[in-house]
Image (cartoon, rainbow, N blue to C red; front, top):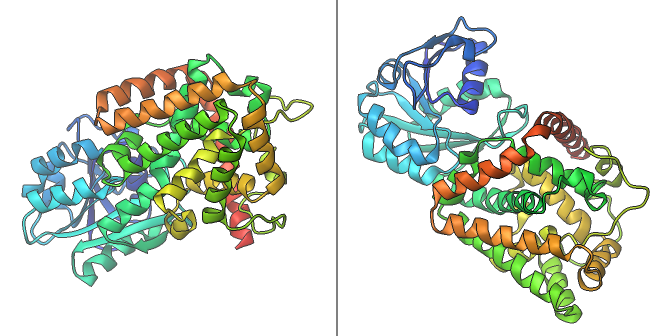
Length: 431
């Protein structure tokens, strides 16, 4: 492809994915593990290896490469750049693949030589998702157009959609589209674990919308905890949004518990009007359709559907309403997980009969009130951990729940990947 050498410091799941794809496209890649220099083994990178050189440490990578990408956790970015940044090759381009750009850019400005140019990126999907057609943010923080063009040529092997943004706008958008989404699914998993439930064994949580909820919850807990902790704790906009989600869950739950139908209905309808507009029965523009929702189940669908108040979905729209967030504004930078979350949310809110059923169930049916209580407690707990910046507490809580669901991760991953692939193809055909 060219004479440029690509350096990758940090060989987690995303670092490995980048190394494989860039090297398979013909670029030379110098790689090292940021946290365990000298420990990386070629066998960790399966597939064609002729263009990848495993170096002992980040100094060797930064001195010998033309574009160096730091693919490390947000909590470690400053220490890693401080260690290797000063030895960066003269005139090189440096970027990062962290999910939160504020600490990344701060580390670059503090530790990189002034002659070094800065072009960062962020693939808005996980390592298990095909990057073709997915958003790939390009951030020209301090670089010539020639340098930006080189980075884009290198990353063209991803076949992603380039989205040029500033670091500040990137962080705002990722907070809007990811922070609260992650909080909702983390809270679902925590509630099910607290109740000692595997949701695919409970009729209330099988079929339709529930399939999407369960598969996405399992997808999050099968990943590494720091992916979500970094975004939640280091993104300047994320903490307030997660706090509002917990507040929305709590206040809606109190109205349900007190059987305050009028206040509950008015609040839900006000949120709907602001986010989705007036009610309509025409669903041809919905992101998801009925025929898709029943296909991807980890359990056996019951003979008749069990009604659910969908507190998690009612709360997300209430949260967007209070924060004045229009979820459709950032679709070009949305992740597959966010698109599915928005899809099932609008599926409920733009179907007047289904939304009224949720309201009736919330007020009149106490059968699953204990489940709703655990979900409310979980949402507040995650918010508190994030507000306090408690990384260790976040890790411990996440890994405890992760261990509970771990026996089904293999099956859930297969079903979830197929679900995302099928729905994404459907969305592309609609466009």
